Length: 184
Figure 1: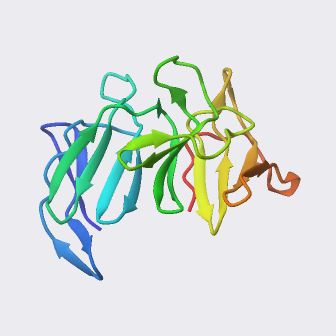
Figure 2: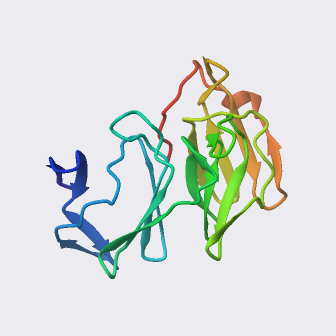
């Protein structure tokens, strides 16, 4: 996968686009908002870019959506949190943790995008944090690390998305505190 640096808006864009089972070489349109350290999630022909930092170190408080078939970007400005994790949970984009957009307080809430609005379907994480790693395996949403109350977090917490219960397996604790980690 080749990436080109775009000097006009200080962001990277990819030259390869997945369409069905084939890679097509194409020039993608620039993102509406140049952002770094963001999450990217794919669902139903759309790439959702959430969170991240603007070039002036302010948080990006919009969600950017790339519509693959139309090769166009749209933005959604009413996101409930930033500096959060994100994943597709049961067919819906879900933001995990981060900083609450309204209060500016670090949160453990999970916000799910359903029918063009945000809902809190799942209980909040026991440990509020931002810059956390997130992965989904079957019905288990795994969160790891992050930053909270001026300290790096070493906690791993798992949400069973069917029972909606959180637990913290002692055998999965991080060997050292970590934040801004990627998980797959």
